[in-house]
Image 1: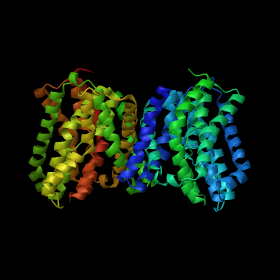
Image 2: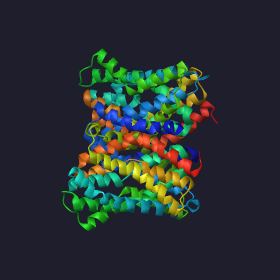
Image 3: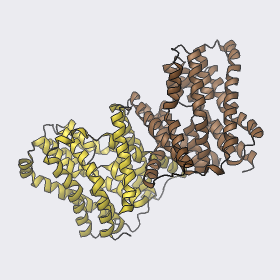
Image 4: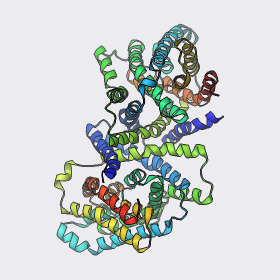
Length: 314
Length: 313
């Protein structure tokens, strides 16, 4: 237990530092968005490409792992949609608020997940999580956009628009590049691998800082019950679905542990931007993200221990 | 050749930073955010952890500090000595002189750290960190004074100069690292991992920011003054380290780290200072750009020379 906390503490200290830095106003809001952009377009693609390209996936049930994660997400989609009416009635949510709830319980914070994995599970962990990103992101984006189009005020983008935004998604592209390099057996020339490594090192801390800068503690006082329910769904239920489906498909060991922990990270920071763009309840998204990040600081250590145990890792 | 290849990633990152800026993906002004995070947080973290973790007693700190301080003094004198000649040759204004002065006497410590970490590892990085701790205060004070005297801006209050130096996070990073080290407090493991996380980010993000700050266009037709600042920085400075090391007895790894520190291009923070204090900011940016491009060739040459001199092959 104390080992896990020691491993995770730097992650949350760095997030806290980002939140403190944001308060100092040393760095203006739009400059934070530049930092996030660089992490999104440059730093993370580098680490994703590199870790997948040089990873050894022989003997790893990659396809079954991805399938289990997709099924876990679909289960959460179905649950949230099936419970929509009672949830809306009991939690006092209108359509836009429900879309924010939906994004909050289904999406994942790729930055955060990728930052945690190498600390907890080593280089193979981040390679698997990067693969998981490639499997999950298209589905999660399509789900979020569809729900926003149906229940929030925004107009639905065309199918072509959705496909186009996925085709230029840096996580998806860099995963594909890594998979191509890995499968072709080309690997990476040493100077290129080192360049990507150097860039990728920048990714983790920068991502954690910007995750911290995105937190909104001030408004947390106004959080309603929807925030609490969304937090519980995401931090507890989603990892449970990941566990169930990996178990059902016979995925164990590191891939199973990575899937479970990936399920238990907070929702994506990009949910906020999407909510604002498509008429979702953006302030609610910010609240859910803040509550989930605080909650994850408490639940992740337990989740990691749990994941290690059920997957049979030492 | 091996040296070339091993510093290639560092320059590849600088080039990438420049390319990303050109795509316009990130508004030009917002790059400042990256620089600020590096300056206030990532760089100090890297210095702190580098200095906190080494065994100070075993390092030849004295000869290194003396060499680098003497180097800095000689550079200042040299830059003032060539001022009349440059003025006669190019009609250099005082404001232009401040940029030649800054570009000739500042150095980008984090490029040096990146190279040294890559080539030699943590111990050598500590030499660069120590050099930065020793040189950052005098270099900043003197550059501010030179700009106040020869720049077209207003002269700062002497108390403000002290404040600028005391507020410098590079100093804070270095001092806190030294305190942790000398006090024997050591680092609490989670804090160490956290600092390590930030310090690793310093190099990646810092090098991208260096690239984003380069001004290719203004460097394409370099005037004579650009060459003056470049020669002083890339040729005279490392050469002086070689000569001084005979006198101070600086040898081995510390000597190689000192050569690399002396051979790196000037730092972009001189640009901000030039802009706010009436220096010729464009001249500074052009010089920094030319220096960075040429450094890709001169740094391996100096490393090769340093290795031949130390007999390390």
